[in-house]
Image (tube, rainbow, N blue to C red; front, side, top):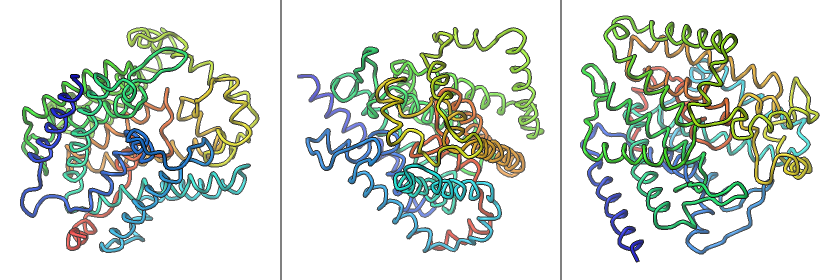
Length: 446
């Protein structure tokens, strides 16, 4: 059977990639980056219980409300490990809180919203788990060279995500393909097409940034492209095609366009122009959409109908459910408890999000939650604008993550929970002072 030689080749290729990417000298990131690496790997593929299930081990049942004890334990251990690393580093927590007050106020509001949730214990467990996202971000940001550390993490994630996805789709259909009443789709390492699209989007943004900006003279962290990177980019293109994820494709096209524009001399000479151009483009799009219906043209070009693969019908159904418009149902409480079977009877079994991040925020956290997201994104853009004259490639990468998150959440919900789009959005927005970064380097071997 071809799958066994293919599996051996895949394993050898992955080992070769990690061997070529091994840490060199004292300037590489610390071993602590394996903690956010593991967190992001499981968030982008399958959780621990899912991998154990593929191996023939079923340790604990999984339910929509209670989750799985193995997954809960594994993420909790990663959170503890991240907290331990941060406790060993010289972090000025007062400064971290004041520099990122809107993010911490948002997480505080999420915690307070548990009080009016009909399923408080479920919401509490989910909130504690989500606190791991900013913890992982801070582990990366307190590295001596945080953008180098993030680059190493994203590159090594691609070493696993992409070849294994190809292997699963081609030779392990029971693992790499998803079967539903709507037909078959390809999910690769994640087992679900939209999740496969997300890992292609994230990997595509990283490699595009590395090719177009991170190797330019003046970049603080230069990484030379290799033939291995080109092979991985080819895998990104093929897997993105197989996933049929129009959202991820559109977001990647916008991100790559932003990177190409930012590379021009006109933008580099006056970095603030990139923000102005982005605002003008967004305003022009809204005007054209209101007058000429340009959204329908874009949707058609992506091969989707006007319902966005039935998303608009889901939006209409969930909007009719009674929720508190100001405060919502409580953190991650809308798709829970007795309400879930009713929702599934109307929108389809297995759906657990509104497929619109802004609507999802409204359902769970009301207009207050939506306002928080808007303020957080705006504060992130202001931080990026200040960073443009300090580290241009890093600022553009942060801008790509923010712009991508804003667009991605039109047809998917990623402003919460365990997903890498939300973690990278937080990475783009959370800041620590440069002095803290230097001080943390003294203990970065923790």
